[in-house]
Length: 170
Image (cartoon, rainbow, N blue to C red; front, side, top):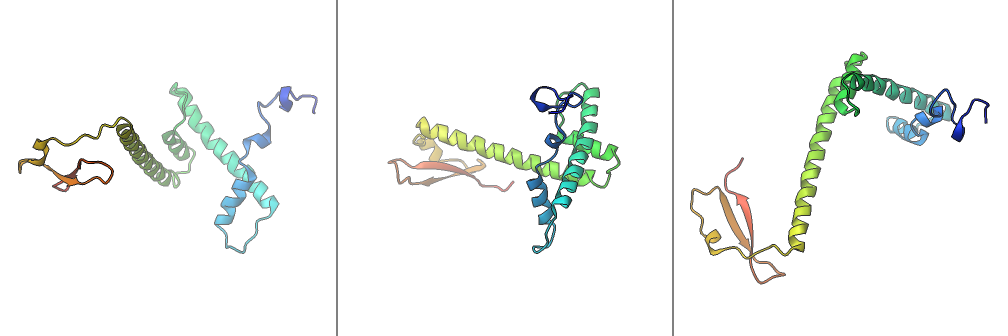
């Protein structure tokens, strides 16, 4: 161990080792190979150089976003802060596609959360035996009602289950 290293082998001048700041080289190599022809090879030197470059770039952009958050007295850096930092650092061509990606990601996460919520509610209803036989009034709806009920016999029970479907398109 070097003389100026602190506990755990870390340098006193830095809170962590340089190699701990870098993305894993296997991930960098995999990303590089995806953009090259199938028969192309990537040297170890090229992977290490790219590893260092992309890690520095990520740190550079994240540092700018973090500084913005610090000035706004926030502790969490979010995707919008990263997009802002990209534009603020002169990467104007990259900020709009990143914003579109971020919006698509948020939309998908929202859909996934809704699906999980519905699945959890359905599982809870099944566990609580809350499927009840529909009342006789549910079979006779007026024409003004926007929902139309369809009865499907259940193979696992002696009563019909009721499913609602929209009679008018959105």
